[in-house]
Length: 116
Image 1 (cartoon, rainbow, N blue to C red):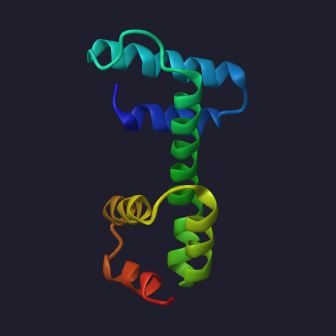
Image 2 (image 1 turned 90 degrees about the vertical axis):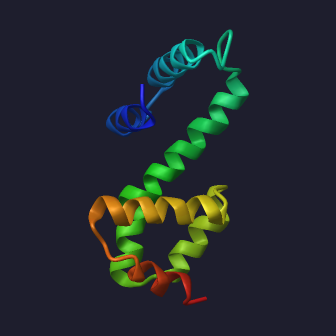
């Protein structure tokens, strides 16, 4: 199962409660066992960190980044980086992916990255 499928499922379900969390954990555990990366289930603490990072990434790409780019709001970008727990390199990778996906010229990223 690809990360995109899990991401779409997470976004669709909005990760509302424990039932969805447990379903996602089960799906990911099965896939990791299938790939021989994991022998049992993912430990809860590790899964929760991964889930939080995935949710933050989705919020950034699908909600905040379109606003940041359209308004040139480098301050909102920096606030997200500071508060989200995602490192700057990952945020920049998400931005690159989003530009390709949305067919946005990459020079628009330079505008928000250089405004600090």
